[in-house]
Image (cartoon, rainbow, N blue to C red; front, side, top):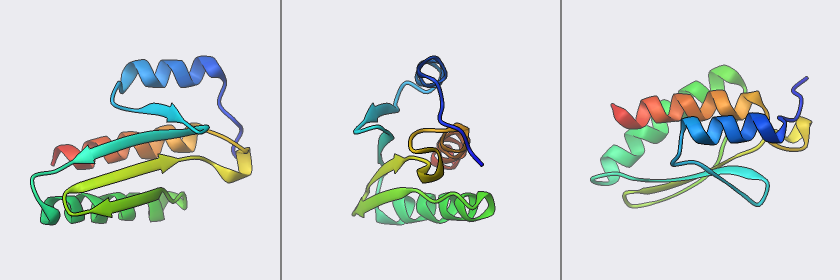
Length: 95
């Protein structure tokens, strides 16, 4: 079972990946891509990583924009699972 991250853990993560922030108790990030195909490709890669980890994002896509919120319901907040998926999303966004 996942445990809720401490405020120190969250701050360390945010200092590592500064494009992420905490919004409404969730890790939040907005990605902008060149076009819909790139946005969809990112979502496909992220979906594969999420499925493998059995940890799924809350997300929204319009054209070239993808908005992501990450939280771990079983931990009632942000956990290491969210940090791990966010890092994989960052790697996918750079492809």
